[in-house]
Length: 477
Image 1 (cartoon, rainbow, N blue to C red):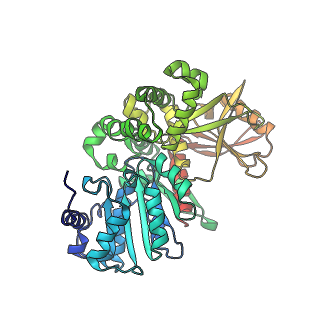
Image 2: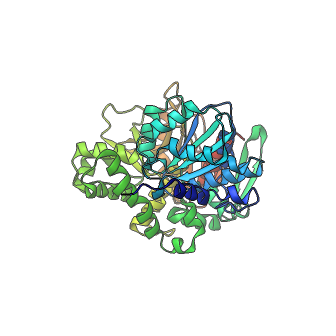
Image 3: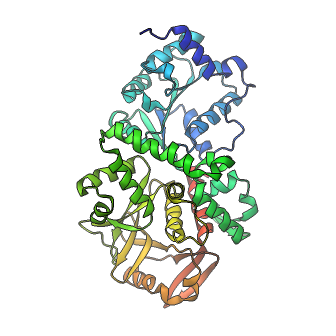
């Protein structure tokens, strides 16, 4: 077998980095597509020379990591960075198979006579395809203090595991979740049309729905395909999101990434469990019930749940009781898809009257919370009631606020349906904020029922507010 020649490798590097020949005015891939709201904070991290670390950008498949890298390259070029000081390679490209990061970097250095103290920006895309990538990247960070290294990858479980093990003090993990509902509206150009934003004191904002019926229509579209930027922009993908999402995203994680990382031999077993979880997103499940419905042993399920969560496919939420006490043995828990569009891909698209709208609305709201990695949420359930979202104060471990998620206006009129909420607030006087109830169309911030203050807000508007406010904090605004 012949080794790939240096000439061919350099030719591929030039092909992948057209700005070397075209200069700052040349076109960069994806430069005309909208930027994620994460972009400015991400770019600041890249250009912050005071922190000597590589950036490891990880997240689910097809949510815009490579596009954000190209956007960063475009902005570097626009800021007078010499085009010859920027290197991009996708390690998924066959010609780079078997090459170390050091070898690839050496070709780049030799091509432009770069020195050890040059200011270079090096982007390694899909780095999980390189065996022992974390050892190689750590070595580069230690050897070249003036180089800025950025790595991306879709096998998020592998990236996070290796980054934590080998990159302590050398890597900064940067997680890119699926699109928020706020980003979705921005991408389709309807944010200003459907949302009125009113500034208040202390950099706070009030968001109002200009047309709740139209906002709800877009919310249903968001549930069906809106978590993926590519699906938002492609009419063919929107017509058949199942083919795109299932084949290109779910199957690659289940059939390739996780088996190769964890040595899973029975792929169909893992697939059955994930299908069961996806169908029941937003519902309470138990190990016993999952074992019976999927045909997978309970001990195996425990491992698979950890794998699926590490791969950003699902999120588990622990249960507390009506007194906000945790269970010593968590027999039951809720599982949410990290992106509600995955359920539509597997089981068909929804409309506003679909039976699954309640659980998918809850899934979408939890999906917005993924953008705040610091908040741990719970749900409360007891014999006579349930609260969908409860936040415990980190110091006192007492409930600070709670939300009951509905895709219905009925509780606003049939107040007796709020009795479980009243019971929970009475047992937990630490809750000082009004208990929020999401609705389908009704907004009312000043409802008093049995001496408990309730706020009613449409679920679509609440999902928008969550995503917008969390991203505003992420971006440091």
